Length: 211
Image (cartoon, rainbow, N blue to C red; front, side, top):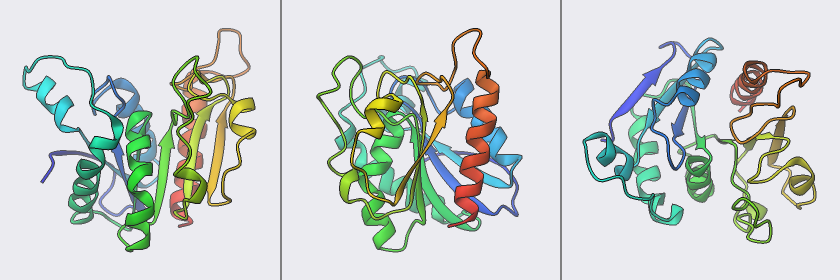
Protein backbone atom coordinates (compact mmCIF):
# COMPACT_ATOMS: atom_id res chain seq x y z
CA UNK A 1 0.00 0.00 0.00
CA UNK A 2 1.12 3.57 -0.67
CA UNK A 3 2.84 5.08 2.37
CA UNK A 4 0.60 7.71 3.95
CA UNK A 5 0.95 10.51 6.45
CA UNK A 6 -2.09 10.71 8.74
CA UNK A 7 -3.25 13.82 10.59
CA UNK A 8 -6.34 14.24 12.72
CA UNK A 9 -8.50 12.47 15.28
CA UNK A 10 -9.38 8.80 15.17
CA UNK A 11 -13.01 9.68 15.81
CA UNK A 12 -13.34 12.03 12.85
CA UNK A 13 -16.45 13.12 10.99
CA UNK A 14 -14.86 12.25 7.63
CA UNK A 15 -11.54 11.35 6.02
CA UNK A 16 -9.91 13.31 3.20
CA UNK A 17 -7.15 11.80 1.07
CA UNK A 18 -4.91 14.56 -0.29
CA UNK A 19 -2.36 14.37 -3.10
CA UNK A 20 0.40 16.97 -3.43
CA UNK A 21 1.03 19.45 -6.20
CA UNK A 22 3.47 19.00 -9.08
CA UNK A 23 6.56 20.37 -7.36
CA UNK A 24 6.10 20.04 -3.60
CA UNK A 25 5.90 16.88 -1.45
CA UNK A 26 3.15 15.68 0.88
CA UNK A 27 4.82 17.35 3.88
CA UNK A 28 5.21 20.79 2.30
CA UNK A 29 4.25 23.74 4.54
CA UNK A 30 0.98 24.23 2.64
CA UNK A 31 -0.02 20.58 2.90
CA UNK A 32 0.97 20.42 6.55
CA UNK A 33 -0.91 23.56 7.54
CA UNK A 34 -4.17 22.72 5.78
CA UNK A 35 -4.03 19.21 7.26
CA UNK A 36 -3.61 20.60 10.77
CA UNK A 37 -6.45 23.06 10.24
CA UNK A 38 -8.75 20.29 9.04
CA UNK A 39 -7.75 18.06 11.95
CA UNK A 40 -8.80 20.87 14.31
CA UNK A 41 -12.22 20.71 12.63
CA UNK A 42 -12.64 16.96 13.23
CA UNK A 43 -11.51 15.88 9.75
CA UNK A 44 -8.92 13.11 9.39
CA UNK A 45 -6.44 13.71 6.57
CA UNK A 46 -4.31 11.15 4.76
CA UNK A 47 -1.49 12.46 2.59
CA UNK A 48 0.48 10.44 0.06
CA UNK A 49 3.05 10.94 -2.68
CA UNK A 50 3.03 9.83 -6.28
CA UNK A 51 5.91 7.56 -7.22
CA UNK A 52 7.93 10.30 -8.94
CA UNK A 53 7.88 12.45 -5.80
CA UNK A 54 8.64 9.50 -3.52
CA UNK A 55 11.65 8.74 -5.74
CA UNK A 56 12.92 12.29 -5.20
CA UNK A 57 12.64 11.77 -1.44
CA UNK A 58 14.80 8.66 -1.74
CA UNK A 59 17.49 10.69 -3.43
CA UNK A 60 16.53 10.01 -7.02
CA UNK A 61 17.10 12.44 -9.88
CA UNK A 62 14.76 15.42 -9.83
CA UNK A 63 12.72 14.77 -12.97
CA UNK A 64 9.71 16.78 -14.13
CA UNK A 65 6.37 15.33 -13.04
CA UNK A 66 4.74 12.97 -15.54
CA UNK A 67 1.56 13.93 -17.34
CA UNK A 68 -1.33 14.12 -14.91
CA UNK A 69 -3.34 11.51 -16.82
CA UNK A 70 -0.65 8.88 -16.20
CA UNK A 71 -1.10 9.20 -12.43
CA UNK A 72 -4.76 8.15 -12.34
CA UNK A 73 -3.92 4.57 -11.38
CA UNK A 74 -1.81 5.69 -8.43
CA UNK A 75 -4.65 7.88 -7.21
CA UNK A 76 -7.13 4.99 -7.37
CA UNK A 77 -4.72 2.72 -5.50
CA UNK A 78 -4.18 5.37 -2.82
CA UNK A 79 -7.93 5.89 -2.42
CA UNK A 80 -8.49 2.18 -1.95
CA UNK A 81 -5.62 1.99 0.50
CA UNK A 82 -6.92 4.94 2.51
CA UNK A 83 -10.37 3.36 2.62
CA UNK A 84 -8.95 0.57 4.78
CA UNK A 85 -8.22 3.04 7.58
CA UNK A 86 -10.69 5.82 6.83
CA UNK A 87 -13.05 7.07 9.50
CA UNK A 88 -16.48 8.22 8.36
CA UNK A 89 -17.07 8.95 4.69
CA UNK A 90 -14.00 9.11 2.44
CA UNK A 91 -13.32 11.96 0.02
CA UNK A 92 -10.32 12.44 -2.23
CA UNK A 93 -8.57 15.51 -3.57
CA UNK A 94 -5.35 17.40 -3.63
CA UNK A 95 -3.36 20.54 -4.22
CA UNK A 96 -3.19 21.77 -7.82
CA UNK A 97 -2.05 18.80 -9.93
CA UNK A 98 -3.05 16.41 -7.15
CA UNK A 99 -6.59 17.74 -7.27
CA UNK A 100 -6.60 17.49 -11.04
CA UNK A 101 -5.62 13.82 -10.90
CA UNK A 102 -8.24 13.16 -8.22
CA UNK A 103 -10.86 14.81 -10.44
CA UNK A 104 -10.02 12.37 -13.25
CA UNK A 105 -11.01 9.35 -11.13
CA UNK A 106 -13.63 10.84 -8.80
CA UNK A 107 -16.57 10.10 -11.08
CA UNK A 108 -15.73 6.39 -11.29
CA UNK A 109 -14.95 6.03 -7.58
CA UNK A 110 -18.09 7.88 -6.59
CA UNK A 111 -20.29 5.82 -8.89
CA UNK A 112 -18.86 2.62 -7.40
CA UNK A 113 -19.54 3.89 -3.87
CA UNK A 114 -15.88 4.06 -2.90
CA UNK A 115 -15.78 7.80 -2.22
CA UNK A 116 -18.34 10.40 -1.19
CA UNK A 117 -16.77 13.56 -2.57
CA UNK A 118 -13.89 15.50 -4.13
CA UNK A 119 -11.93 18.51 -2.82
CA UNK A 120 -9.53 20.48 -5.05
CA UNK A 121 -7.19 23.09 -3.59
CA UNK A 122 -6.24 25.47 -6.38
CA UNK A 123 -7.54 23.57 -9.38
CA UNK A 124 -5.38 24.16 -12.50
CA UNK A 125 -8.14 25.09 -14.94
CA UNK A 126 -5.45 25.93 -17.50
CA UNK A 127 -1.69 26.49 -17.59
CA UNK A 128 -0.64 30.03 -16.61
CA UNK A 129 -0.93 32.58 -19.43
CA UNK A 130 -2.69 30.07 -21.71
CA UNK A 131 -6.39 30.33 -20.76
CA UNK A 132 -7.40 28.71 -24.04
CA UNK A 133 -5.93 25.36 -22.92
CA UNK A 134 -8.76 24.44 -20.59
CA UNK A 135 -8.75 21.27 -18.48
CA UNK A 136 -12.46 21.10 -17.77
CA UNK A 137 -14.04 18.66 -20.25
CA UNK A 138 -14.31 15.90 -17.64
CA UNK A 139 -15.67 18.33 -15.05
CA UNK A 140 -18.65 19.24 -17.21
CA UNK A 141 -20.27 15.85 -16.58
CA UNK A 142 -18.91 15.13 -13.10
CA UNK A 143 -21.63 13.72 -10.84
CA UNK A 144 -19.43 13.45 -7.73
CA UNK A 145 -20.07 16.20 -5.13
CA UNK A 146 -17.10 18.54 -5.52
CA UNK A 147 -15.67 21.54 -3.69
CA UNK A 148 -13.00 23.66 -5.36
CA UNK A 149 -11.02 26.10 -3.22
CA UNK A 150 -9.71 28.76 -5.59
CA UNK A 151 -7.83 32.03 -5.21
CA UNK A 152 -9.61 34.94 -6.89
CA UNK A 153 -6.45 35.80 -8.86
CA UNK A 154 -5.06 32.30 -9.33
CA UNK A 155 -2.98 32.30 -12.56
CA UNK A 156 -4.31 28.79 -13.25
CA UNK A 157 -7.88 30.13 -13.27
CA UNK A 158 -9.05 33.34 -11.64
CA UNK A 159 -12.55 34.26 -10.58
CA UNK A 160 -13.71 35.96 -13.78
CA UNK A 161 -12.45 33.07 -15.91
CA UNK A 162 -13.96 30.32 -13.78
CA UNK A 163 -17.31 32.02 -13.33
CA UNK A 164 -17.59 32.23 -17.12
CA UNK A 165 -17.40 28.41 -17.38
CA UNK A 166 -20.46 26.18 -17.44
CA UNK A 167 -19.93 23.69 -14.63
CA UNK A 168 -22.51 21.24 -13.24
CA UNK A 169 -24.35 21.98 -9.97
CA UNK A 170 -22.37 19.18 -8.29
CA UNK A 171 -19.33 21.50 -8.31
CA UNK A 172 -19.14 24.33 -5.80
CA UNK A 173 -16.36 26.92 -5.67
CA UNK A 174 -15.15 28.64 -2.50
CA UNK A 175 -13.22 31.82 -3.34
CA UNK A 176 -10.15 32.85 -1.35
CA UNK A 177 -10.24 36.64 -1.22
CA UNK A 178 -7.52 38.14 -3.46
CA UNK A 179 -5.77 34.76 -3.27
CA UNK A 180 -3.06 33.41 -5.55
CA UNK A 181 -2.44 29.71 -6.34
CA UNK A 182 -1.51 29.11 -2.68
CA UNK A 183 -4.47 31.25 -1.52
CA UNK A 184 -2.21 34.11 -0.43
CA UNK A 185 -3.44 37.70 -0.95
CA UNK A 186 -1.37 40.69 -1.91
CA UNK A 187 0.08 42.95 0.74
CA UNK A 188 -2.43 45.44 2.07
CA UNK A 189 -5.36 43.17 1.26
CA UNK A 190 -8.36 42.97 3.58
CA UNK A 191 -7.36 39.43 4.53
CA UNK A 192 -4.23 37.35 5.17
CA UNK A 193 -3.01 34.04 3.81
CA UNK A 194 -3.76 32.37 7.11
CA UNK A 195 -7.21 33.92 7.14
CA UNK A 196 -7.87 32.55 3.67
CA UNK A 197 -6.64 29.11 4.74
CA UNK A 198 -8.82 29.14 7.85
CA UNK A 199 -11.85 30.06 5.74
CA UNK A 200 -10.94 27.30 3.28
CA UNK A 201 -10.68 24.77 6.11
CA UNK A 202 -14.10 25.87 7.37
CA UNK A 203 -15.59 25.40 3.90
CA UNK A 204 -13.98 21.97 3.44
CA UNK A 205 -15.07 20.71 6.86
CA UNK A 206 -18.64 21.89 6.29
CA UNK A 207 -18.68 20.26 2.85
CA UNK A 208 -17.32 16.92 4.07
CA UNK A 209 -19.61 16.69 7.09
CA UNK A 210 -22.64 17.24 4.85
CA UNK A 211 -21.80 14.42 2.40
